[in-house]
Length: 376
Image (cartoon, rainbow, N blue to C red; front, top):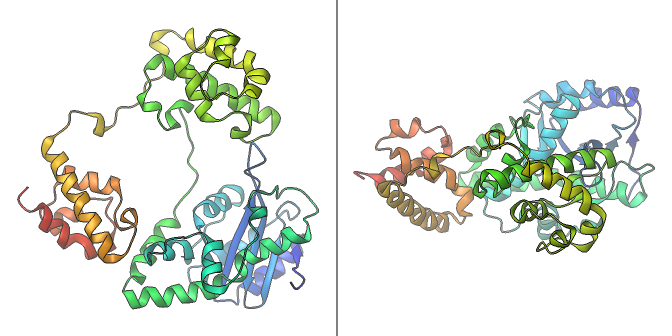
């Protein structure tokens, strides 16, 4: 492995921005400390251009603004793999917007690849083996080891040729326009401001009655405070499944708490008193103040005709996915099928009025959908 430059000053970043302004294609990745901190942050940015690969240390650089015009210029292609999280972090931490995106993971999905992780793809096509030891490393620590630096560099070093290969295959299959539409949608992703009770963001909470939901909210609020105090990610304090189990069983004593299925003895011993206190607070919430889980349309009275259409659509999707050699959820997802079943479009104009449908899906799948739903 050749020496990998690490930029640590504002002047170096300004010079890099000038150089990248001359490039037509760059590959970008980042490393964050989400596995080790309460408030995750971007700890490293990797860039590969025709001139080579280098790393930017945003923990030492104070001004990354010179890079913003390059990253937002759609005429410069930015290759990422699995860009969703990276784009959210870059916008949140630095106010950066990415235009001209080319996401090789989206390409892999649209090509029907069985394994879409970067390590899997590089191993399959280029016989490159990424060292997975560092996927969960603490990237906020300094100095970075030589092994970590080399690992980070490998994440972008091969993206140019992977993108070229995938672009050629997408063209051959007539799916390149699909990819460009997906890229454009991906460019708009942002972290959302999650207001309201924490319990409403928990998978499975919709099945809880209001009292267990209130207990769960108290447990989640306690965990949030504890994680911030200890500067740990939430899961390292205690897992959400454990909190769900406690909200359902609502133990009142340490003995009852230790008997909760799935709760480790370590958590019971170390956190037991605090957990019991949070549960007690949840029990004392007045009935009128308990959280309410919003009832979705799918929980309303079932319509047999809609259910029948949905089953027919799912069967059609399975058959179509086999024809396209794609994962069914990539071809068209469950939420889209449910909306089609409810709206029951009978014409191309009706399909245009279903916002969940993408343009490539209307063009490629619309005729089949309309034929299936005709007269239902």
